Amino acid sequence: MRRKQLLLVAGVCTLASSAMGQIFAPAEMSRQSSECLECHQKLNPSLYQQWGSSKHYRGNVGCYECHQADRDDADAFKHEGFTISILVTPKDCARCHSKEVEEFAGSHHSKAGRILGSLDNVLAEVVEGNSGLVTQGFPEGVSAAAVNGCWQCHGSEVKVLPGGKLDPATYPNSGIGRLNPDGSEGSCNACHTRHDFSVAQARHPDTCGKCHLGPDHPQKEIYEESKHGINFFSKVDEMNMDNEKWIVGEDYWAAPTCATCHMSETKNQPVTHDIGMRISWNNRPAVSIRPEVSDAKMGLPGANVPWQVRRDNMKDVCLSCHQTQWVDNFYVQYDALIELYNEKFAKPGIELMKYAKPLKSSVPFANKIDFTWFELWHHEGRRARHGAAMMAPDYTHWHGTYEIARNFYSKLIPELRELVEDGLRSGDKDLVDAAKALDAKIEEVLNTDDHKWYLGKMDPAEAAKRKKAAQDFKNRYNED
Image (cartoon, rainbow, N blue to C red; front, top):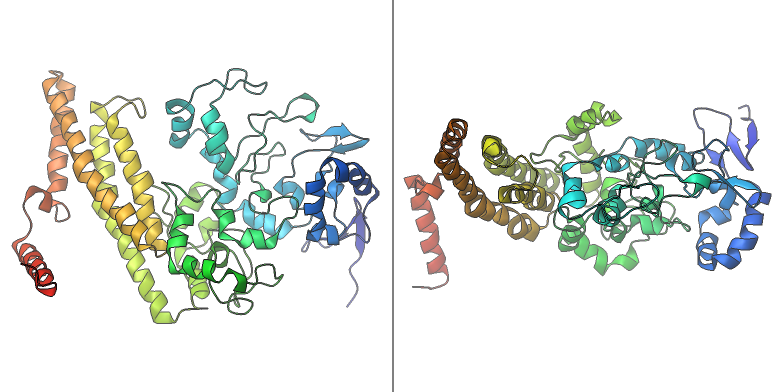
């Protein structure tokens, strides 16, 4: 076969084929990077050592290959005779890693910065915060709670100041959905921490735990509770995590990590940087939806990949350790929990809050019930669903469905009834009518099979069944 011609560009060799578009390592360190290293080896010795342990070092890819910039770039500036930028964006990484960046750009990870301005951000910017952090990029101020909290995981909109400096409210920031000055979305070093870009680190659950933990998305804690996490942490020395080829069931078999299930190679699938391609439910919204639905809303290519295909992708991972019946039965259990949550609590809750809207302040989180409902779906509801997805029973039940039920019956329903009473006493015809409509909706919901126990209307057959179960329990433990 005729050899493809190689074209030397910016000190590295690039395949001329547009189908490949990948960059090979240069034969030697470029003059530009060598000059950079003369200073930075002394000024930033730890960064120099991190880079020295990386594949970039072994491939003669240095400072300039990543930080080079065009004069017209928004964040470009002159430094020691070179035009560079501080930020290394996915667009920069794509010079070498085009396939990975293309997949990442089509994922929800890269769009995480779009949360800016959402209901979640109202909490950090208004309810929790103020406009006390004043910078050149934010002369009217911005909330330090958002800057130090939300933006550090989701990503900030990086603002460039004169001379290529970056506004301190928006940088440092390695949020995975960072909005970059070159128009790209995301930050590769959210997972591949600079400057060693360790593959073993990217595969470790602790890396995902920077963002995926806490009351509303405790995947890290859920993983640690699960058998998967227990196996991993007890057998981490057997995981072979720094091996270049990392195929489950071939290069390691002690346990899966987050990367194993959502990204890494199997005997039948290549590595993917679109973390949605093996997920069959999107459990972020108040009501769980199929991932292709949310992809379509965001204009992502995953809109054309049905959930059944994604589930088969995940099953392929599972089958490395489990047999078919185990995997199929797990999904029966998981789907049932999603159905339970959606139908019993989420959908009725949304309807009830819609009826309550005319009776409460229109200002978000100015009403006690706003917090109650938000936490019910955004915190407890997600915990239950994520717990079931990753087989963590305590998060599914005690931190999940138990807290959903407790707060639905002991907080949400009483607070809705308070709105009814206030509306009826108001003397305002519109409010009285809204109160009557809400009251009727409450009764409609509570009289359904899922909730009528609360009114003392449990079906006699179910009541007899519960009574027998209670007696069997006493007999089992010889209790009176």
